[in-house]
Length: 96
Image (cartoon, rainbow, N blue to C red; front, top):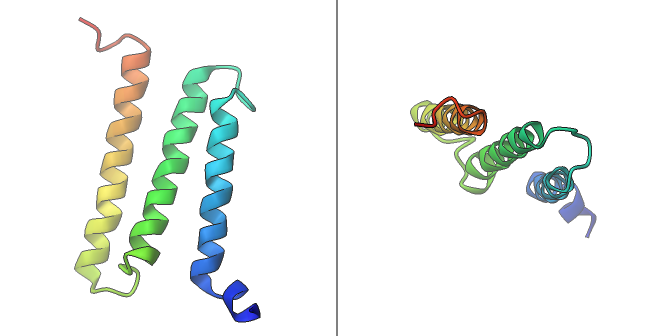
């Protein structure tokens, strides 16, 4: 039983559960006065979770370098695009 607790995948699973609870709390207004900051924080936490899933559960962490680069780049690009779209859309800068 203790080998399951010391396993890396199990620890990452617990981190993912904690991140889900954290984003749920932020979604209910805990820690932020402005909902825009909470929303961006939730997006960032979600992308950290996606990165853990890509690297550890899809086993890209020990794959060839080009596969890991693609996974990391995907997370960075999608994260940047989502945060920018949300921020500028929430502020009305893209509204026509």
